[in-house]
Image (cartoon, rainbow, N blue to C red; front, side, top):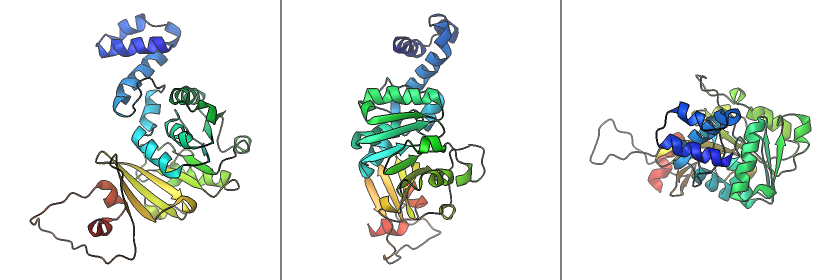
Length: 277
């Protein structure tokens, strides 16, 4: 199938009509082949590899490689479980540093893509792949990890972001696994109000190439500050410090200098810390 996907990529790049492309591919797999090919073309700025397995939905939710590497290097878990792994990119980077990892997803096709991607990155042997509902007792009892990670799906139509609307809900993930560990990491919508998160920990806002990309919430055992902002790929990090004197003066007039605040700094309410840096 890999050969047919590569052929589809080349035909799409050459601008061939989709009907002609379909006629040259195996009929029983043509829809999947074309979707993977389209995803690979669109993913060229997101990953260093051009041969990954994912559908368009998987590409949409997949963590950018730069972000995945940064978070994996920060956490360096001995063992970790991704309870909604999708096509597996973030877990694969965690697995580079871990001794063992668990990839869990309710979508069997996405889990099979995660398995293929893990093989391409050379970490498949470190990962246990589990197809099932990550909140079920049957799945939970298979997991023996010191860190639980989840990047839940976000319904696009919600006017206000709430934990209970994410899939799976971080509230339910915590209840299912809290007897296993007290170290959780959740990807959350950056627009969510911090007071809606009921746990103590760190809100880390990540800029990627100048645009807000991620909000990662680390439970207290993994936290380094209450709030932080990270600018990638430079790796610049700013942390909240409640002991700093407030030196920010607000003005309604544009003066001699106009400085554009990084989005992550703004969302993390770290403007005062920025001007102390």
